[in-house]
Image 1 (cartoon, rainbow, N blue to C red):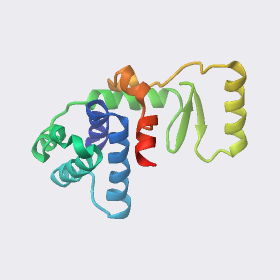
Image 2: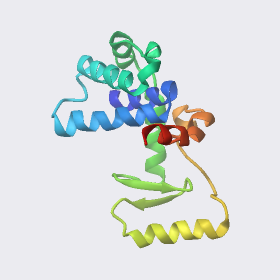
Image 3: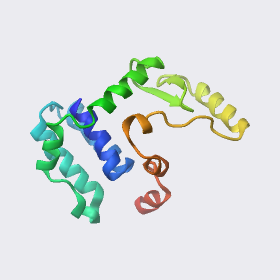
Image 4: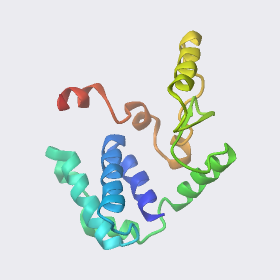
Length: 160
């Protein structure tokens, strides 16, 4: 639960681009490198290094390893993660990968491409998306952060 809380916290503090970079790093840390996600001091170091890398020139705002460890040893964000897990259970998500489209349609990650094409063509024919992200409120992520997303035009232009 500590790593889930950390990803959620980083998203609120630094934005979704940084939290997704940290999420990707933690997947390598756990699945490839074989480290435990419950080793909080090591997790704090990895998180600090990845956040610092993600922020680049804005490094003055990076939390220290000690601040991250203090967060990890607290219960901050726990209730939000528990609420998110309950919401997933209520809409029938019991495993990953899953896609939640329009805040209500659950599509298995292994679904054939035509399933997605049909859904997106239906949305396109309506001319708008009905519903939206279901976890912003649950996780305490403000609307501005959600709307900015993780792949803003500015960031894509910077990278390419």
